[in-house]
Length: 161
Image 1: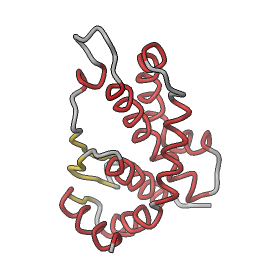
Image 2: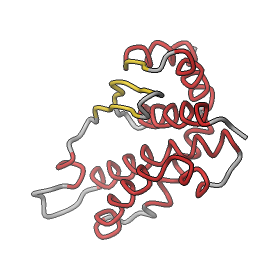
Image 3: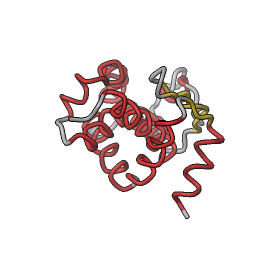
Image 4: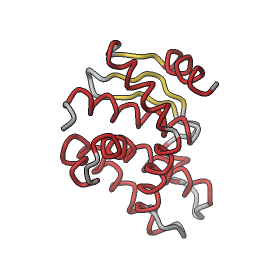
């Protein structure tokens, strides 16, 4: 059984690693307040193509990326604890799960893609491939409740060497 504090650290580290993998800048991460702050390289309007009659591939990719980032916290918890995705959602990923479902409607109506399940699988595969990054961040969050984006980059630069 994994402690709640440890699960939170890995959950938040999972969000950070996935966000970086899809090119979203991390502003900060907190294990105490259970949250990450990101600066996406696109606006919500661009992501949903508001004001544009036709959807394009980039808009669909942006939505899939955001869904993967939202689901990556639960995927990190799942990989850490050896539990099911549903158990990880119930243990602390329910708000992320609901946010991901909000993005699924426009995605399935306008994009030719496997959608939510694809993003969920992408989050899991990305975290498995970058598990050393997840662990490094989770370890830092053990002694530092809050990390800036600059600190995250410094920590992960050491892992990437």
